[in-house]
Each structure stands twice: as structure tokens, then as C-alpha cells.
Image (tube, rainbow, N blue to C red; front, side, top):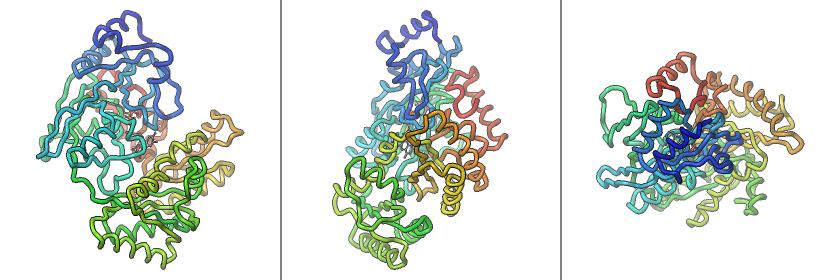
Length: 462
Ligand SMILES: Cc1cc2nc3c(=O)[nH]c(=O)nc-3n(C[C@H](O)[C@H](O)[C@H](O)COP(=O)(O)OP(=O)(O)OC[C@H]3O[C@@H](n4cnc5c(N)ncnc54)[C@H](O)[C@@H]3O)c2cc1C
């Protein structure tokens, strides 16, 4: 906890109105989208990189643990202050500073909301392609620190691919200005890449130069009902061989039922599938639409699709996507135990069936909901809490289940966290995806950037 004296020193750096230890503010700003409980000492809102650096330097002198905080939509507890840390929110460092039409880059502070960057790119006739259901609340600094993925990874890759330069305050309190928009820069170790996905354990991202790209033309989505998991994967292979896709997402019939019932939405098609897929592509001309229709009809003929609907307007495009994007918030009422798993795309059919078998043998009373980015080999497994079970007992039994799931995952050389990061929630399982040597090297890197161990201690590893 912070002494009054240190609190006053921090207030002197940012101004009295930009620091708080009021109880409701502590619990609000001290947590993310997990159910982990906040126990923050104070929240501070630096207004610029100089103030941010001064806070980090003071924290080093006084050995104060810091938790970087952005939009707090994280799903791994990375932005949770559980041990009396000082939360440093980048919320107020939110200006879009500079656009370069030739380089197709934009310089933005870490606190820019993801959707605002997308809208800014659109105003310039360009496109920022990293997108997910929390784009309206997550911040660029948080996206970079988790190397966020989302629904367009199949074509555009993860956040990492869109970072052209970073300005960082390291855990030691130094400013690093890295890469500065260069496309080619083979000058030794690429330190910038270490900060991407580091979950705030090495330093603060203060500013980022983000790449933009050409806007996609007439994005269109085809929703198919499919009879089984193996059919779903055959549909994926069929479409990938036949045309260029921008997204290939999936969800189960149970997920669809929850979303349509809770939000009183229409079911998208007459036939009931075991799974549904959303296949997105650029309908640049009639030939591409005809090709998509031909592939769809071939899937029907082969019995790997049962029914389908193609968006005919922007409104229909959005209502079909809504069925997928609302799943996470609709499921929240069941306090699900979430997994964010990835295995090589070719092996996910076999893997999913094995996981289902494990759960049905060890915990047949639990309802399981699958959805996610199956085109990327990344599935979200949500185990719903039965009403009669309290959250503590439920979480405990899910943790035991997790060990079994992760043992199988390790045999596929899969990842215990495809895109949400490790944070607090997954750190006990890191060893299933990373070797002892890798973890030791990571700790060594942290020591270089953050010699006093003040940056998000206890996150990723202890
Ligand atoms: C409904 C919903 C849907 C989602 N869908 C997806 C999805 O499809 N794909 C996906 O990848 N994620 C998804 N997420 C997870 C989350 O939105 C992303 O991880 C997002 O990038 C987190 O950004 P944030 O601004 O909320 O970061 P926060 O949660 O505030 O922080 C995330 C991590 O970054 C660190 N951090 C934050 N800012 C900085 C900074 N400036 N410098 C250094 N470290 C920092 C924090 O300490 C923490 O460890 C979803 C979440 C929700 C609630």
C-alpha cells in the first residue's frame, strides 16, 4: 500500500485530479473483464510521456509495483491489481497525432480506443484491420500488449503485424523510441517485438505507429449450418482452396440458441446444424459472388453444409456478424470458465473431440459452448457454471479439468493462450506451452527491462 507521503509525491507529478484512492474507483479501475477481485492502492492517470516516465522513475526509487491499464477488456487478469499495486491508466493519453499517407501509418498515443483508430483510418480512405467484439472499449496500448487477434487474423494477422514503431517507457524508467516506421530494419535484435504481447511486464507502451491498409471492398458474409465438426473443417478447406477469405469463424448450435433467445434475434436459417460458420470475403465483383455461391452449393451436394444465407445488404451483414460477436457478452451471465486454445488448424477436429470426451467423462454435468476463430486454429471453450454450484467450487473443479485438457493440448504442441495472454489466470499453465529454458530466458529479458521488478509483477510468471 502507498504511504500518504508517496501518494502526495505522485499527485505532484500529475496533478491532484489525476490520481485517486477512492474505494469505488479502486475497484472499478483495478480490474479487467475477468472475475478476479481488485485490490489496488491507487489509480493514476498520466497526461503525457514525461509524466509517465516520472511515475516510473519514482516507482523505481520507492519500489512501488505498477499495473499498466488500458481498456480493461482483457480476459486473463493482466490488468488486475490484486496485490495493492498502483494502477497506471493510459486512458488520458489518447490523441491521434500524425498521419502519413505515403507510408500509410498513423502515430497514436496508447490510450486511443481501437474503434477510434478504425474510424480514423476510414476517414483517410484506409483500413485498420484488427477487430473484435471489444473494439469499442479496448485501447491500442492494451491491444499491443496482448498482441490481440480477433476476427480477421486469417487474412490480416495479429496486432503485431500492424505495429510500425513504438515509443516505450521501460521498467527502468528510460524512454526507447523504436523502429520509427521502417519497413526494413535489420540492425540486430528487434526489441520492439519483445514489448508486443509482453502484457505490461517490461515497460509501458506510450505511443505507437500503426500501419493501415487499403479498405476492403464490399465485405460479404455467408453463414452456413453444418452437420458436424468434421464437416465444418471440410467446409473450411473447400472455401480456402476456392477463394480468398477475410474471416472464417464458427459457433455451436448451443451458442446460437443462447444468443437468439437472450437477445430475441431471428435464427439465421431454417435447418439446424451442430455448428455454424461465418465465412467473410470481399465481393469485389459478380464473379466472386458466383464463386462463393458455387462453393456453397458444392458443400450442400457433399452433405457438409445443410443450409446457408448470404448477406445482401450492410444491415444483413451486420446482423449475421452480431450472432457471433454477442456470444461472449451473452454467456457472461453463466460466469463461464474460459479457455482460449490453439492447435495446428489441421489437428483441431481431433483435438476438439478429445476435449469434449474429457469433459463428458469427468464433468458430464457441465454445459460446454464452443465458438471462435476456427480458421486460425483458435477455439474458445466456455464451460458454463450450473446455477446450483457456487463460483469458488466451480472454478476449482474447472482448474482440475484444465490440467487434463492442457495435458492433451501439450501433446498437440498447442497453446494455452492463443490470443488473450497469460496474465494471472493462465500462468500456472504456461509450462504446457513453453519449456523451462524459454521461461528462464523470458525472466532474464524481464530483468534487463525491469531490474527492480516493478512492472506488473506476478503476471505471466511469478
Ligand atoms: C467481448 C470481448 C471479446 C473479445 N474478443 C477478443 C478477440 O476476438 N481477440 C482478442 O485477441 N482478444 C479479445 N478480447 C480480449 C481483449 O479485448 C483484448 O485482449 C484487448 O486487446 C485488451 O485491450 P485492453 O485495452 O482492454 O487492455 P487491458 O485489459 O486494459 O490490458 C491488457 C494487458 O495489457 C497491459 N497493458 C495495457 N496497456 C498497456 C500499456 N500502455 N503498456 C504496457 N502494457 C499495457 C495490461 O497490464 C494487461 O496486461 C475480448 C474481450 C472481450 C470482453
